[in-house]
Length: 473
Image (cartoon, rainbow, N blue to C red):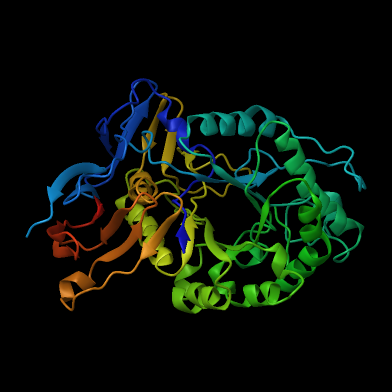
């Protein structure tokens, strides 16, 4: 199964737009407590990695980050008897269609009541002056095409049952009527308008968190759908609209918590008319602790192995009364890595962070849903802080490119090995990648055996993450 690189929302590659980006530069550390460290970046300096090049056969490269202060520190070794640009190489980006809660205001693309032909549909300044230029700059800096996908939070208020972009209203009427047809055509108009700016989308999700009432406050922008309502909307409206449009854009269903799996997939993909329109299933991480990955993700994959599973949103610091932003928090980075390793080992193809960059408060956010982010910007000092979350994601996104395939590891019976979390992947260039996470407060010795090359004797330091890269050629 293909494993797309780990990805973020909107600003990933702009972080490399600083002078002297060639080669590697070390972290400029700043501490917010004994173990709470960020790497400071400004207009003239930011740490970065050297291009990833596979080592010679019989040797390996190791990258290590740790609570003790290492950040993607490189070392080399041998088994015993240019490939990319600087940065951590996000390649999949999620964009809100019109506003999300992380906008500065609520807005849609057509707020003229009863405009069923969408004659007044237009992109506002948020899209034309901010989103689109940033996407164009990111695309120009990327070594390979970026896969963009878009998600709607809300329709215009005049389409909703509660008459407000906020709250848990549904679309008025039922599938196949003028409201649902107009909402489906709204997707196509969005794709049309972005295409005029040479921005194309690999996929759209049918709705961000259609069962948001389970988690979000009542003033969030949203549209409520059940699985059956989404199925019928796809059958009668959205599926045909996408299929008949000039855009080769794929459709992702659910885009909500994995507690809804495999039920949601059964309802939509179990329908012979809806299923051909659907490419994959979007999953959010917020309620992962409630349901095991085996009975949700793996069960869904076994039922529908020809549809991809993609984690489409995750963040730390959500719905907390204190410390939405926790500068230098290693634990939040470990939660990212733990999630990524777990879901990749249960047939998920990729993992998307919610916001790559936020301010010191965890916003902007017009409903005050402040959260944490891998990048925190202090505009008053013209600097930004690269959090441990940034480096944890880099241990995957930098080294597991699109087109990689997860490979199974055979573990020995030694108990120490069982303490370590890990995932391995075969890259398209033939390289092998192993990511090892140690969430314990003590060092754990372990070994890596490649039958074709030999053995690596290694140690995972306390509270660390390591990426090993080698070639069998």
